Length: 514
Image (cartoon, rainbow, N blue to C red; front, side, top):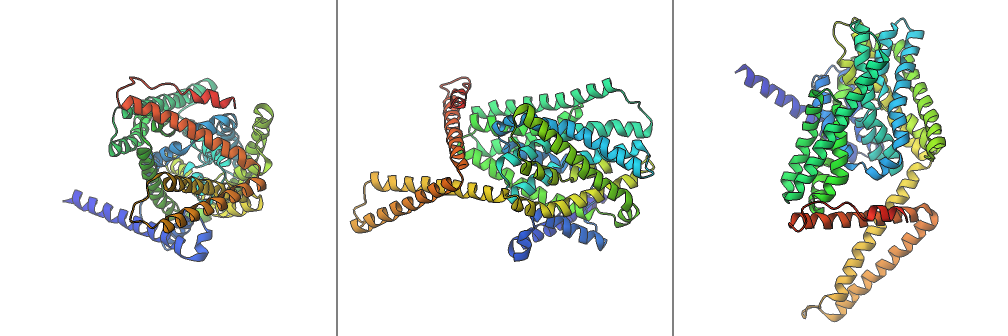
């Protein structure tokens, strides 16, 4: 009986959280002044207001964040992350994700130890909690604002892969703070290699395994369900094997999104799965951001105002050093061509969120400064979400980066409409006119469609004159379409039994030469 009562109570709490979240999201799209605020940040604000009134919805535990919320969000991000774009910027992403995290851990830890009475070991623990930019916060914000694909790839790639370094650093520093382990460079590097290696290995095995499995049948709902099992299954298995569940899930998502969806899913299934994960990401984001704000403890924030202010300054300073320093290094060594404007957005857009909170909440209770760590981390997270998050859109507009993305979106929309009308025109030209349709009406429709096509063509040409880079973008879209057609054709041959194995892409190397 008690068990049934507990289930009912948890269900009621879940429904309450969901109702509040969806109400806020609905208001953010119907009230004019709220439309200027990304709905994720609006959820944080509402959560903070609820916390101020001491209304606690659900206890936000590290297990809830890491095991329930993160896997689907990471998988969805990996599914939509284009490998070609990531490969192009793999060098700067690796620098930001590895070296940048180390700079943040050491820099934040040193500043806290230098300017407060917090011991160095505990200060470094705060640094590790705040070192990784949060993929949940960053991805949702950038997508909602419509940031350019290149900038989104840089931020997403860093955010998705820097958690492995931060978690390894956090685990080591917890042991140092408790005095249960001594620092060793060799063992630290070995632990990190195992952590990342197991994550990539398990993610690759599951990703490629499901990719080849879905080649053998065409059952959209089963294939959709397999991706959901893959997201949670990869995380659980990888963590149990001592690897990084985060890196494992991201690897699985990238493989299934870029490889499995091409060789094992027809276009309709691919669209169905993409829409399914778009819904899952929206659903989970609507809950997690509300709970982040609702978890705030104002007493703890007030008691740690000074170290919190120092931590905020340290986060901004170390982030600036790593982004501008490593970005310049990447430009010099790998000719990455990351502009100062893009580096500025990467610096200011380095939000902290659920990952930092999960790490802070997982500090052992036996550590006497645990509540101080949680208070400082929550304060910094709130600053990045509410101050940096709410001003990121203005920064993008002032730098002219949103205008560029708007032109690109307008260009793609015009091309899509042109393609649709060309199909309509082709139907009118080639199909037999039904006898009951008046010839004059038929010709009038034909003239209307052809006129709209001319308007769209002038619009496309005008956009290309305004932004010559759109021509290169159009060329890339055509290449992607050709590669997709090639992959779909091979998949059809495998599913029909005419081929026993997937053929390696032929066009990819050919198109790279053009």
